[in-house]
Amino acid sequence: MIGHYGKIPDIENTTTPTPWQMIYFAYGSNLNLDRMRERCSSARFLFKARLNGYRLVFARYSTTDCSGSADIIYNPPAEVWGVVYHIHDDQRTELDVAEGVDLGSRKQFTLNAEREGERSQRVMALAYVVVDKGDLQLKPSAAYKTMMVDGAIHWGLPTNYIAQLKAVETQLASASPPATTAFSRSAPSQLPV
Image (cartoon, rainbow, N blue to C red; front, side, top):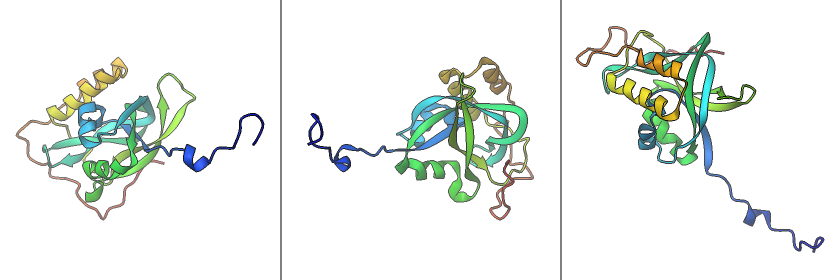
């Protein structure tokens, strides 16, 4: 017995490990909660966040819809807005597959996301970036852009950022693949430092 509180509890029996292992910064189509939940049903919104010093581009050609998919590149003083989700660790592989990690087209990248309204609070989060950044002038499909804009509106991202997303030009539905598509697994990524 210790004091008037009784026996010291068995730590192993009272401590429940948290299943939330992955803190994920979404800036592309995964801004859309329906899209995110299709990929990872455990996804839980934490907060809106800004990534300072990066710019949104469409640097990966998607064979699914014959258009560009979102990526980020280091480009101060630009900023990219997104949301931070908790993802259950057992669904990390599913998200990796959805993002093309298994194909070598994207890889995980750890970054400092700045929580909205709290300049001093930065959170280490995982994002996915294109490995072989080819044509930075690719355009997303109208459906992909709509997922991004709808997600940005749903989460209440800044109106000027939503306007930037709305202004993104889209790929024509019948467009063929660009001449310089980046599918190579052999070229290492030149990620920002």
